[in-house]
Length: 85
Image (cartoon, rainbow, N blue to C red; front, side, top):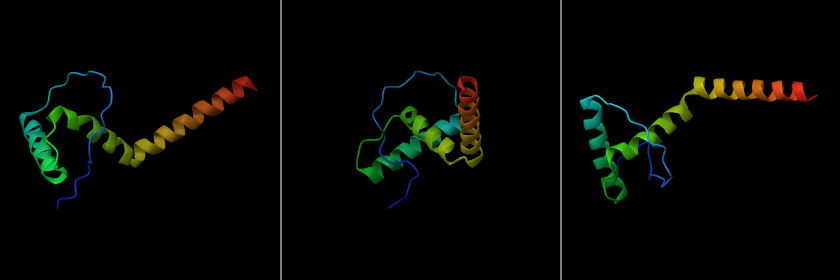
């Protein structure tokens, strides 16, 4: 069985964005959807449904982004504590 980075897709209310993808990226999304369907036993999702969890996974595993976001949050929190104190 193939171990994909994405698991079953959550059913969540989306925010609509319009993007253009290179044709080869779209082909890869179609292939990924087919493999995901094969491994999960569920119907293949639309390629667009794969993009949000892929981006979410990418950002969650980008150590520099996670650190910068955490540091920024700490700065915002300490700034508001200084103003209220």
